[in-house]
Image (tube, rainbow, N blue to C red; front, side, top):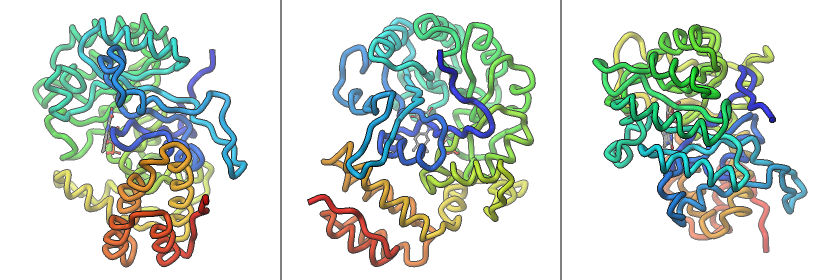
Length: 360
Ligand SMILES: Cc1cc2nc3c(=O)[nH]c(=O)nc-3n(C[C@H](O)[C@H](O)[C@H](O)COP(=O)(O)O)c2cc1C
């Protein structure tokens, strides 16, 4: 059985609902992501065969695929993230996924969005540890030991921290890895992630620990690896801002310095709001020449796998990529209005001097 790479040199792309679709995952892999996670998939949706679920599971054959431009791409290794609070559905979902050829899975125990938590899933699992363990037992039985990870927060709130006992139990039951976003569910994305908690888990768990949370640049990721001893890191909003974060990560670990800022000092000792953190992320500099190439490739990949939605997708991704560029406001206004590839081409040419390859 192939092992998933869970080591410092192998950064992961985090599950990102609404964003980590097939074209974006392949883009991130080409830029150095070692493992990618799907967007979260509802266990019930899988069992009842929802159409949206099918889109979320789009992938390449494990052996890869040759594209029209002769590049060879793969979406392997892929971790399918599932969510749900009922052990029976979760177990059945893993069986269905295995039957369809997926090999690695992750259980969402960290999403704090009310739509998910009100069903008892996501971070709400941390409020009912006995049920979380019932779910874990069922999905590990279905996936096989070592093939499924669990993505946790510290607990629901500061007076109910459960990550340590829960992670220990999960490891002893056969979890393959544990990812920790060291905030409480009620914090959402506000406040400062408690990276010491990742260090504690990494030193006491028998399975690899992956860090998530405010890793906005590769320098942030590498710092957390060094300071906590965690096995690997997951990039989320940092990858949405700049998918080349994975390239930078690998360069930094090879000792090829890059003068990227570290996010952490910007915090000082003051708690920050989620909006402040987003503003800091948005303001981080990007290299326009590199970004032009990234956008061009993203558009090619999006057109390959979601021809009908590709333009719309580029209209949502590009404004995120360009926020810190000179003239970003005008660029964003032009992008959201463009209604065909020709118009997008003109904009890219104007701002990046780069053209899309057009398919007639
Ligand atoms: C737009 C968005 C969508 C997300 N979707 C998921 C998801 O589907 N499953 C999940 O476990 N976490 C999800 N997360 C949480 C991220 O995977 C990650 O743990 C979190 O953003 C912290 O990392 P960051 O601060 O580096 O962004 C999402 C976060 C964002 C911003």
